[in-house]
Image 1 (cartoon, rainbow, N blue to C red):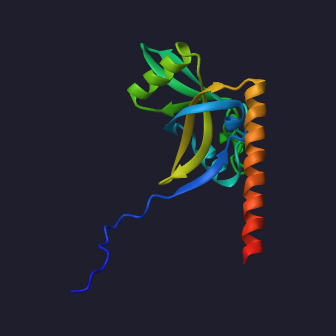
Image 2 (cartoon, rainbow, N blue to C red; image 1 turned 180 degrees about the vertical axis):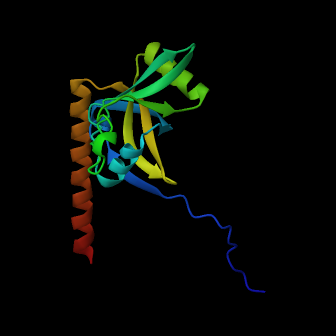
Length: 170
C-alpha cells in the first residue's frame, strides 16, 4: 500500500504582507505581540490591495463606549481608492480593531498602568481578511537607540567576515 499525503481540502494559510512599520523596532522595545482584525469599508480593502498604506505615526487607543472598552487604530493612512468616486473613505479615520475582550483588557491595562505603548507593526492579508499585528512595548531612549544601532552594525560586520572567510576556504 503506497502512502500518499491525505488531502484535507484546505489551502495552507498564506499571509500576504501589505506594509510594515519601519520605526516600530527602532523606537520601541517590543515585549508582546497581538493579532487583530480591522473593521474596514469597501474602498479601504480595495485600496489596501492596490497601494501600500503609511503606518509610520499610527498607534492604538482604547476607548470606553457604552460601558465597554473598544480598541481603535489611529493615524493609519490608507490612501483613497482610485475608482472610489463619492464613496471613497477618509484616509486617516479611526478604525476599530476586532479583538477578544481579554485582549482589549490586557492592552488597556498595559497602556494605563504599565506605561507601555501599543503600536501596529505590520499589516497583512490572511485568508482574504486584513489583519494588523500589534506590539506592546516601551519607548527607547536615545542611548538605547544608539546601542541597537551599534549591535546591528557589529552583527553585520561579523556576517561579512564569516562570509568572506567561508569563500577563502573553497
